[in-house]
Every structure is written in structure tokens, then in C-alpha cells.
Amino acid sequence: MSGQSTSRTAEFLRSLTAVLALTLRSCPGALAVRVATVVIAGTAPVAASWLLKYVVDSLTADDFRASDLNWAAAGIGLLTVLLAAASATSSYADARIRRATSTRAQSDLLTAVNRLSGLSKLEQPAFHDRVQLAIQSAQGAERLVGAALQGAQGVLTLAGFLGSLLLISPTLAGILVVAAVPALFAHLANSRHRADMFWRTSSLARRQIFYRGLLTDTQAAKEIRLYGLGGYFAERMRTDLDSINRQEERLDRRLVTYETALAALGAGISTGALVWGVHQAAAHALTAGDVSLLVAALAGMQTALVGLVGCIAQSHQTALLFSHYLHVTQVRDDLPAPAAPIAPPPLSHGIELRDVWFRYTDDGPWILRGVSLTIPHGTSLAIVGLNGAGKSTLVKLLCRLYDPQRGSIHWDGIDLKDFPADQLRRRVSVVFQDPMEYDLTAGENIGLGDLGSLHDHGRIHAAAADADIHTALARLPQGYDTMLSRMFFPDDTEDTSPGVQLSGGQWQRLALARALMRSERDLMILDEPSTGLDAVAERHVHDRLTALRQGATSVLVSHRLNTVRAADAIVVIADGTVHEAGTHEQLMTAQGAYAELFTTQAEGYEETVR
Image 1 (tube, rainbow, N blue to C red):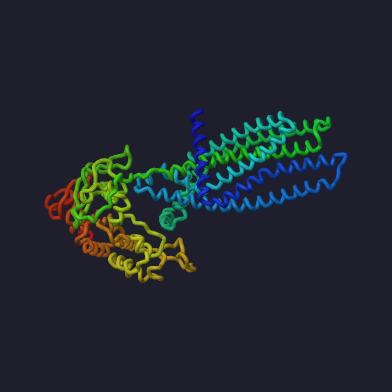
Image 2 (cartoon, one colour; image 1 turned 180 degrees about the vertical axis):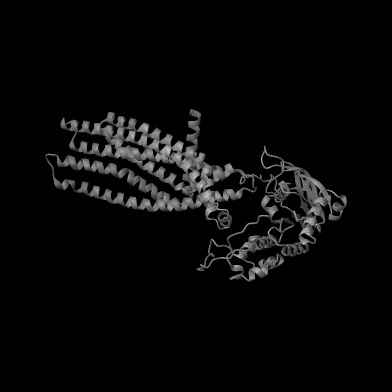
């Protein structure tokens, strides 16, 4: 148990240090101002209490002269002004710290997530839970700074009043300090339980966000209304929220019990101390000024102790949550950088897969089982097979979104692992079977394929023409500047007209245009590029692709076998292995799996024609 406590303490100190360093990098000036206000706010009440003691003792003295109190009154007035100014200034500094640290923390967090070269982390639910908690802690990083500064202010006030009480009664000062220990441990235990609760319920919180998104998403609205799913998803969201709320309720009840008991203890000790002080004054052991100082010290210490304990508890809870932020920002890349990186040369010989084995988790089923094949430079390879055969997994490996567990993939004889992933991908363009539909303008949706040419209208129009989408985009209300979204308005304009939503086939062709923007590409990968296209559009797109692939190296993944027959080579993937390979004519002659699939599809088309 002590080992766990030590680990949590170390985790707390690590998180606190990281947040303070983050704040210092984000807004050092505001932090310095805030520290100054802490010193003023922490010491002013103690100074004011001593000035009040002087005033009371002077008023009760036999040789009292009103003129002697002018400087004390001026001092109290000055302290009042300083406290008011410190309060206003600290609010301003806190706001600056909040904005700066939140912006810096979220920026660093997203930079860290984007630094992951592959997909393995992003496809883990536990990592998504950590990211969700990291986002929350990044948005509230300033709370930890605020709690730490508020705690420092409490320490200053507490130290001042404790020193004052030590002069009046060391025993009484010791009793008050000892009485604060249970409150500290109670609040720390509660903060630890609350941080643990946030981790336990993180998946529930993420899921209810998913349900809420479904109920407000325009893409999902059609099916949700057609099938009457709104009430079902709303009920599931309420169930998850109720589960979270029940756990929070248990913690809140415990906190109420602790705070009530501790408040009663504090009130009892303060009342007893005040009664003792009055009796001591009656016996002339204390002056009237001493009693006024005692009253101020009791109230000040009680307030400072409660505030300090609360700050420590809040800091503890926030720091434990911030550990998720540190985990995400410090996570190692899932695709390790090569020890001696090599810039990928222009492809001149070809790509070779040598006995490639792959599975998504260490205990999951093998998706690929010893795949070996070669894609000579300047040729087209078609990969076909039933759903789940491993075709899309091969695409991910060729893009180096994953590395194989066994075997290797070579680019002109060099292992892909020897290339920095980002440099390799600059030489690859891909159309995935589920391409992104960005809520941006039509021109931006295409230009994203090559950020360096994002504003090169000539290249964007040429890519759109090659993908047979130029005419449709040119006819939009604002042409290529038309927003392809019904969720957002165009940036930097006062235009509030709704955007345009393309059809599925148009989005597919726009994604193809985006892939064609890659001027340095040596390899084009088309993963089901005709998804969502009607028969006429499919034929036209594949005719264009056939022309574009002439003399280029390309990989075409498709379940529509009539679109792959023109490829230089065709590979049939089954059960994660290369089941057959050859040209269309060779495979049809072999009368194997490919011929059976092709004949079955052809018969389906013939029956449709009849």
C-alpha cells in the first residue's frame, strides 16, 4: 500500500512540475504577476491583523492619543487597496494563463497524436480513452496552476497566522495544526477516488459523446429517422450518463459526510480557543489587542486551512488526470524511426513483399500469412478476393501505416522500415474505399492532396478534370470556392448561405482528384475506387485510370472483376495468402478461384440484362 502511495505522490509531483513548466513556457509574464498577487493576498490579512491589534491596544491604553493611530489607519487602508488591486489583477492574470496554457496544451497534445506515424495506437479503445481524458486535462491545465498558486497563498497566510498564534499560545497553535491533518487526508482520499472514477467511466463518457454525435449528425440523420433509432440511441446515452452519475453521487455523498464532520470539528476547536482567549483576557494574561489578533488568527487560519486542504485535494485530482495528458504527449511512435534513415529514391525497379505476416493485435488472428509478391516498376497490379481476405490490410502495409510482424516489404530492394514514413508517403498517392469528406471548399478538398499546391488553381482544375469531376465542381454556386458542407460557413467571409453536399459518386471522384495532386508519386494505390459510382461513371473513371496508369506503377484493389482485367498482373488473396497470380487470360485458363468469381459476376450481369 505504501508503494502505491509513493507512486501516486511521485505521479502527482511529476504532473505538477509539468504543468508549471507548461505555464512558464506559455505565459511567463502572467505567471510572474500571479505570483506577486499571491504574496500580497497571502500576507496582507496577517499584516492587517497586527495593525488592528495595535489599534485596539492603543485605544485601551491610559496614554491614548488619536494622532498615534493615523499611520495604522493609513496602513490598513493601503492594505485594503492592495488586496482589491491584487484580486482584480489575479483575475486578469488567471484568464491569460487559462487561455495560454489551454491553447499550448491542446496544441502539444494534438501534435503528439499527429506524431504517431501509424494507426496501431489510434485503433486501440484504451488509447482513445486516454486521449479523451488528456483533452479534458489539457483544457483545464490552468486549474492545477490556479490550485497550486491558491495553495501557496494559503501557506503564506497560514504561516503568518500560525506565527502570531505561537506568540499567544504554542499549545493552541499545535492543536489547530493537528486538527487540520484529518481534513487533508480525507480530501486527498476523495480526490484519488474521483480521479480513479474518471478513468473507470472514460469509456462510458466517450460512448455517450458518440451517441450524442449520432443524434445530431446530418450523415446519420437519414437512417436514424428512417428506422426510428432516435429514441433507442437517446436511451442508451441516458443509461451511460446514469451509470456515470451514480458513481459521482456516491463520491459526493462521501464528501458531504467528511466535510460536515470536519466543519463541526473545526468549529468546536475555534469556539474553545475563543472562550480560552476571553478568560485569559479577563485574567489580564492577554490584552484586548491580543484577543482581537486571536480572533483574526482563528478565522484566518480556519479559512486558510480549509482553502489549503481544498487546493491540495484539487491539485491532487487534477494532477492525477493530467498524467493521462503526459502519457499521450510522451507516447512512443508506433512506427520507430530508422536508426540510419534513407530518403526513398524514385522507384526504378519495383516493390517486393517477402513472406509478409500481419495481425492487428498480438493475440488476434493472422490477417496475412506469408504473402510474397512483386510489383515491377511501371506495371499495374490488381488485388482481388472476398471481403476479409486481407486486401485493404495490404494497402495499409504498402503505405507503411503498419509494419508487418514477420517478413518485409522492399522498395527497389530497400526495406520500407529504413525510410522515414512521411518521406515514403510523399511518393505514394491513395484513394481509399472510405475517403474523407472534408467540410471545406471544393478546391481545398482537392488541394489537400499536395499542401504545397493548395492554392495552385491550375493544378487543382487539372486533377479534377482527370478525375472527371471538373464540370460538376465548376457548376457549383461559387465554383471551386463552394463550401462542401452544411455544418460550416466559408472562412474569412460574411457569406452565410448553406454549402453544397455532393453525391457519393462525386465524393469518390473528388477523392481521386485529391490523389492525383501528388506530383512526386511513384506508386498509385486505388482501394475500391469505384465505390458509389453508377455503371456509366464507373466505366468512365476506370477508362481514365487505365490511361493515367500507363507507364506508372499502380495497385488496384477491387471486388468488381470487370475493372481489373486490364491490369498487367492479377493476384487473388484468400485466407491471407496469395492463392493465384497471373494475367486475366492466364487465370481464366487456369479455371481456378478467379475464373469462378469472374464467371459468377458475369452471369449476374447477364441475368440483369435479360
